[in-house]
Length: 78
Image (cartoon, rainbow, N blue to C red; front, side):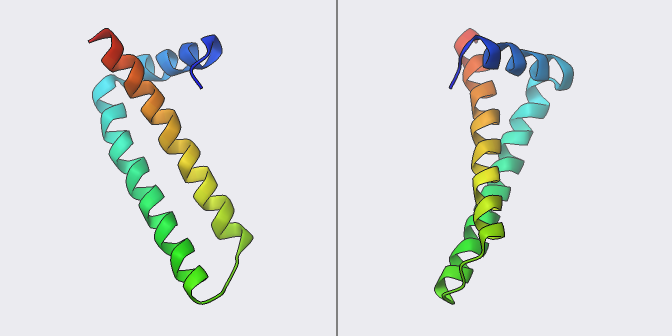
């Protein structure tokens, strides 16, 4: 996950938006992932299998992973 290119991109984002803003972004992205999980689960409970819901769920997982990578970098230097 954290290779040289990813580390550089993470630092660029952290430099642009700031650590505190990105910490808040973690909360936001986790909330969006929870929401996506809930929608996916409701659809599955109704035996509805929607590729758009699944893709949205996957996108939200990626978003959470990205902001968590940023936090790993920040915490490593703290």
